[in-house]
Amino acid sequence: MDQVKAMKVFVRIYERSSFTLAADDLNLPRATLTHTLNQFEAWLGTRLLERSTRRVRPTLDGEAYYPRCVQLLAELEEAELAFRTVQPQGRLRVDMHGTLAGHFVIPRLGQFMQGYPQIELAISEADHFVDLIAEGVDCVLRAGHLGDSSLVARRVASLRQVTCASPEYLARHGQPHCLGDLAEHRAVNYVSRTGNRLYPFEFVRDGQVRQVHIDGALSVFGAEIYSASALAGLGIIQCPHYHVAEALAQGRLREILSDTPPPAMPVSVVYPHSRHLSPRVRVFVDWLAQVFAEAE
Image: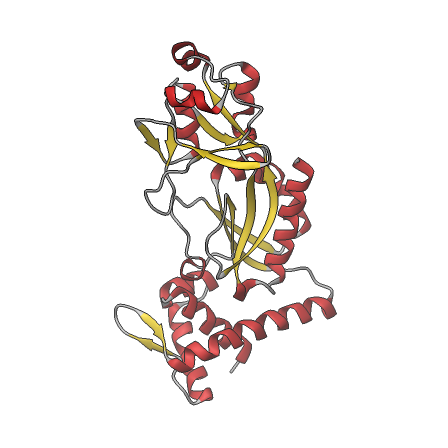
């Protein structure tokens, strides 16, 4: 029995809670995974996973054994890379915000792929909160403040933000000159992807962040819809400057209240603790940090 292969099979089935999904990830027949796991459990003398027709879940021994397997496999891979002087290899699943990816990452992705030709990238753009372990994702690129402390997050950028509106909107409602003027204005509200919470409008004044409520009849989720709503004259928005830079340069949007700008938006790469030693994740995160550093 190949013990290392068996550990990889167990770890992937554990994370995906499915033999079928794990088989797809490992590019192996489902029957091979079943046979390998059965052999592995017999060799260990304990049952690691409970199987039923509906789901797969770990036993108490499986729960205890999983983190040890993850650590051992990561250390083994790193040791092999150090002594064999080979590049990181294998499949790397990444999820990104579409606008971030399209503006900063995808245009330069060819450089990464040339530098690490043995890494197979699978990039997705999810419209929901990604459960990294359950969905088999290695890391995600996210903008905004993060709330899940069970994940490892590395900040790679702080993006300048602007408050803006269309010339047509400003012609109808007037140009605000101070935060108090916003009481007479209308907002396009942005809805959080993790619930129905509206993101507040924030302004930095005298080094302090101040939240201001702006009435608005329109709420949206999605960066493209958000900026399109401002372009259509439907209200005021706040967003990263890069996303509306062309519209600002063309005069289709105008920055307002530039003396009290929004706070910068953090951009982070997030990955589970169980992935933090993976050479594939490490080189990709380092590359992303370089991409954003050179873009600033």
